[in-house]
Every structure is written in structure tokens, then in C-alpha cells.
Amino acid sequence: EVQLVESGGGLVQPGGSLRLSCAASGFTFSSYWMSWVRQAPGKGLEWVANIKQDGSEKYYVDSVKGRFTISRDNAKDSLSLQMNSLRAEDTAVYYCAKAGGWSRFDYWGQGTLVTVSS
Amino acid sequence: QSALTQPASVSGSPGQSITISCTGTSSDVGGYNYVSWYQQHPGKAPKLMIYDVSKGPSGVSNRFSGSKSGNTASLTISGLQAEDEADYYCCSYAGRSTWVFGGGTKLTVL
Image 1: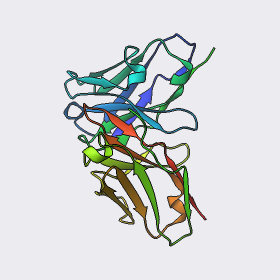
Image 2: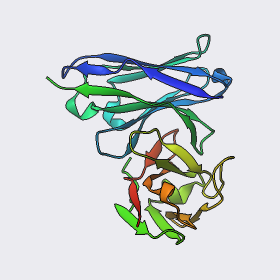
Image 3: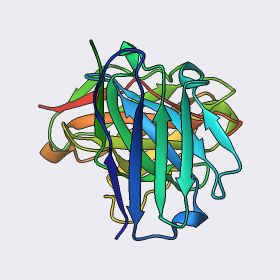
Image 4: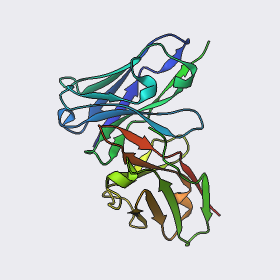
């Protein structure tokens, strides 16, 4: 059974940093692109970032470029998102998602809430 | 990276069929057959319902179907059931390893 478990969310002040983690199990982690998708309170889904199987390619939505860094550790079946210079508009539930090729996010974690507020 | 356009809400009675539209551009929906749809119940993670425009994942009811014409994709739910009440999001590959979601549609089963 595929499982994705996020952790690391919490309350952080504007300008601060936070590191999210996602522990994967039930599939060959190193064989798939992985992504982060977020959802602001009461709002829709927004793709944030993704990373290739070997970590050699990383892509980001424009609003987080230069502030967020996605990474992975295939030896530990783990995905991370380092978030710096956080803004109020980054407040959201952050989901870890497994990409099924270019066409879909076929498995999702339960999400971790990040709140940016003073 | 502009969000795809979906109606804010749709409704239908049990047993009826409803269709949710998702309009993008030639750079996303119209340019690739990589449209997917997700169902999200309150407080829960999204669940994949349709991918590659019209394919259903294993375990998802065949009451859910998808299609695309030009820059607009559609999700149709037939034989509406109470448990179908949820938010629905479309998503399209947008090239250069990026994706874009729709704003979401709240489905109410009357």
C-alpha cells in the first residue's frame, strides 16, 4: 500500500524558514517524480514544485522560485521542501504527491499545515 | 501559470448527471492529453478520479468520465450519489515539467 506521510509544518513568522518532510513507502520511491502541492485555507490546489527521480531536475511555480528548494533522499525514501523567506501568502496545507508520469498525481499524503503569521 | 477556469459550483439531484468544465489555453489543456481530475472531501486529501483526459484509475467508479475538446476539459458524473458531494479540481500538464490546477468546483447533491 502506497503511503506518504508529511511532517514539519507549524507556525512561523514572516521572513522565517521551515523544512517539510515526506516519508514514502509501498512503492519504489527512486523510480518516480515527486511533487509538493499546496492549498491555502478555503482555496484551491496549487502545484508548488517537483523533482526528478535522481534529483537532477527541479521545477517550481513562479511564486516560490528562489525561496523554496525541493530535494529527495532515495536511500531514505524521503522528500523534502526547504521554505525560506516565508510570506503570509505561503500559509497553506502542503501535500506530498507521487507523480504518475506527466499525467497525474496518483497518491497524496494527508498534508501538513504551514501558518505564516506574526 | 494562470489557474484553469472552473465553475464555482454545480448541483444535481440523486440519479442525475452533472458536468464540470475546465477551461485553459493551448499551452496547457489544449496542448496535452494530460488532464486529470481530483475529488476532495472536506478535511481530506485529494483523490485521483480521472487521468489522461478520460482514463479511470483502478477502484474508481465508472460513473465518473472525462473528455476534452480544444482548450476545455470536462468531468461528467452520472447517477449522482450523496457521497459524490465534494470539491472537484481539474489539473493539466503545462509543459516544462510544470502543472496547473483549476480553481475548484463545489458539487452539491440536492
